[in-house]
Image 1 (cartoon, rainbow, N blue to C red):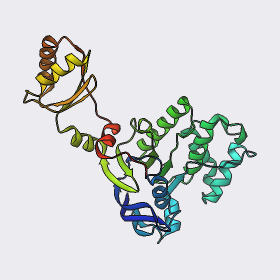
Image 2: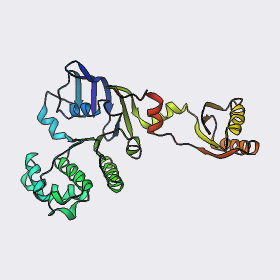
Image 3: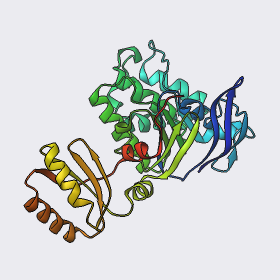
Image 4: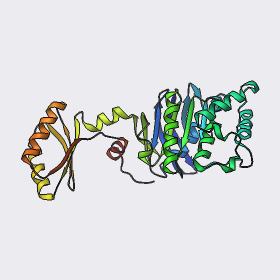
Length: 311
């Protein structure tokens, strides 16, 4: 659905995005991850057709960005990290205005407004002044406005910025619902936990480069080394050293990493064998506080591949 080739953007001589090759399949929810200054916003603006690349090529649903801007705007919706609203209008008036701007057919406007309000849980606010809405509701209203022309692709730049915990949960559920409806989404954030619950793929950026991209399950399998990831929490340093000395002698354990009183490793065996290992280690090492299978996450992928420096 979305492809870039050798994509770069320079501001005068300073590179903001460099040599990005990425591919996002139709229906994916792709997390665009990186620290502040990594180039995420610049990349999203180029994908939305709002910035001209210095070099490279972008295709969205087979459309070359720059060649057919009208067709591009029909299939792409972009929600920036900061936005302005017309506070004096009601929600209905606000959406009617943008429905006309998106050239939604007159006989379909009311139905489209009803649909996007239901999707964003704002139906009860249709006659409320925009200025009376909470921050979370205003964010959902911007998304509702962006969905009026039923875009195939939705680009969200730091959508959870400034939201309280409840509003973040509501936004997460909305993004998951949109993905379930077949919309292709790219969601940027520098906060990994915001993306962990709903992303199916990821592009990790650092200093303008894409340092790793792909489906999350495939990336996790790569960094996990193919085994079952386990974590062991220990009581003290003495018991930790004793257990590590025992673990390194085993052929069924690899990638042993120790951080203070925590031991991470990969077990080469099935779950029945893992249960036997658990019993054996607890019996032999009374300093074990906990032993459990650890599900790797986006954060593990990010920490495994980058230097984590801001450009």
